Length: 207
Image (cartoon, rainbow, N blue to C red; front, top):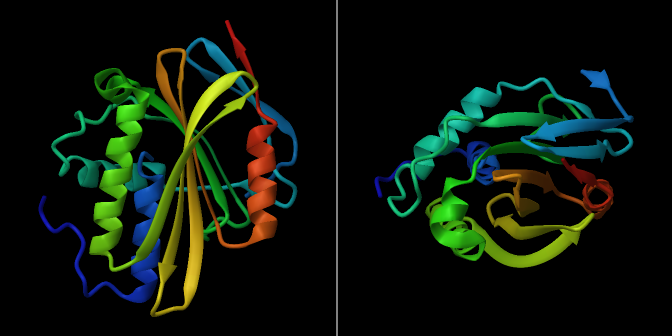
């Protein structure tokens, strides 16, 4: 792989880059329940209290993520049919305490199986976080949300120079022949609980 990240990045940029890396796969107040279509499935999701719909430049983050992924030759060419469903946060500008949901072609799941794909993602994330000089701990598990099986990749990232830690989680499912994912970041227990509960209360209808 080429050295995409430069060590001379400032501490702030390193933190932001780490968060974007996790989300690569990947102002109106809104507390209501909303539904979203994923191919032949319907996802019903309720925004946590005090969170709002963000106004983001999604394409910029996705393109940055895809450029990094393409340097890992074991992963398939990334899908060009990325569909952003929502981006929710406590503010429009912060990269912490946010929720991003999207879906795309499930070619990597088909190629590697879900277990193999998660293994590839974990190896890829470890490699890039180490290049950023971050202390990282990554764990995986499987859960069911309204009878839909999700693989979850949870990451704790610690920056010694800032004495600052934050967490990310990626919920990935093969839903209606699409790779459906929910990616989150948080840096405190209160927001972690609010984000997790909102995701776990999701409802799905397969048509």
